[in-house]
Length: 270
Image (tube, one colour):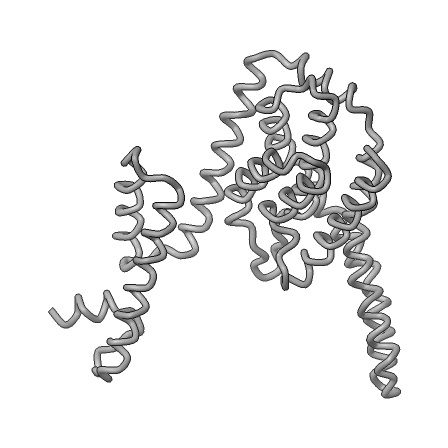
């Protein structure tokens, strides 16, 4: 990789690490991080493909109480860099590179939890320093410590990303090309199963008796081969607008049976 490419990748990794905590611009999401790394490295198409596949896996990753979700930032950045390295010399198979990157994304996300634990442990004295500064009314020091803590979260992704950039492309390509077909197909199937688990986790959190009909309709639409992903997205957007309009109408009626869910209210009225 050229020096400029490495610098740009490290910047993307730094932003992804910080966004894993801030959640403001979503740079840590796979579809964003992988696309940006693909853009700065000259493999935009492959970056979008990898990011889209990983995003399906990460849909159900969320922090719930004391349970910390797998690290999507490290999984996205590291797998994208490995894919780019495999494609650099032009001899690597694109599908093999993407499938392998998807397969190693989940172990990388679990390893990222260890780095997150280290960063949060190091942040404890920073928090105490902010408490001390707050008692003295030193807001400038609070801001500096806040920025320091956020940068530390970014460095936990930027440092591994910088190290990965110096792996030889021939080494990665030779490893990918030497993998047997049964292992490549197995990782492809495993990646698809993990994506299904991500969907299942989201459905488990959102499922109600009112939303199951939409779930069934989605299967019907997905079975129509003429419908593209853009078409399915437009249909989903239209259904969401209809649902919100029904909810607004139900709220404006001021009925005593209003539960906040328009379909439920319509069912109860009948």
